Amino acid sequence: VDTPGFGDSLDSVDDCKPIIDYIDDQYEKYLNDESGLNRRQIADSRIHCCFYFISPNNYGLKPLDVMTMKTLHNKVNIVPIVAKSDSLTKEEVQALKKRIVAELKTHGIQIYSIPDCDPDEDEDYKEQVRQLKAAIPFAVSSSLETHEVKGRKVRGRAYGWGIVETENPEHSDFVKLRSMLVTHMQDLREVTQDVHYENYRSQRLVARNQSNSDLRNNISISSDDTSKDRILLEKEAELKRMQEMIERMQREMMAQQQQAGWVVDGNHQQNNGVNNGVNNQ
Ligand SMILES: Nc1nc2c(ncn2[C@@H]2O[C@H](COP(=O)(O)OP(=O)(O)OP(=O)(O)O)[C@@H](O)[C@H]2O)c(=O)[nH]1
Ligand SMILES: [Mg+2]
Image (cartoon, rainbow, N blue to C red; front, side, top):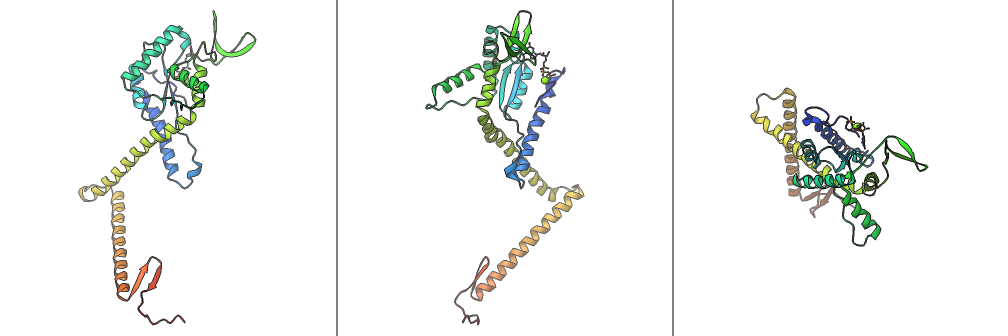
């Protein structure tokens, strides 16, 4: 899912809204499917990972970056990325990364955290995870074009002085980013399910309960209910009256049967030792 035009308008404050709406819509769809009949075959269109691209032209985060990530971080796994890293030198990339990490911390922005390895994990995997963690925010350079370098076809950007290769670890963190996504896809899904979706679900439940109790309270206090609401409320009250009547009748029947020496247990009836005149022989 792309977000074309994000941050391009003069006043970009509302640029985040369609993103939030899209994420929420997917949660809402999932919530509805979960409470439906066919729970086993839910198509999961929830957003499990959000790449947030940070411009290389600033000395760190812009106010829009801070505001957007703060709005998103309780909804989705954010993976921050430095865009167009080929426009910076190696030292500049490292300085910018350091600054971004510090600013994320200062602003209390929760980005996706790669889980720590189990102690009994093999050393190669531990080293891979250590490198991935150290590379955050991943600084990538991308291209839609392919070029020939030493007889190989590579994706990259051709400049007068040479070719910046997208998949060359010396030029870009693209391979690390891809490897993070592949290795930790299951964990990303689990964090979405256990943290972000649960947040959404509990907020929706609170909102639903609130609107139900508002509706009930309005029976007595609101004189300008819409007629549709009134009909609903009258039906609800009638249902309640009927339920009470049925319960009262059941209680009376029980009492009569107990007096006659019968014990009634759900669907079964038992003679309690008093002869009712039926002969079983
Ligand atoms: N130097 C450099 N330029 C890049 C890189 N990636 C994209 N560009 C250039 O940046 C410009 C914008 O790229 P897009 O990919 O369209 O950027 P975007 O943020 O998706 O733009 P919208 O979809 O319009 O919001 C284009 O001219 C690209 O060629 C990169 O890694 N390095
Ligand atoms: Mg785009």
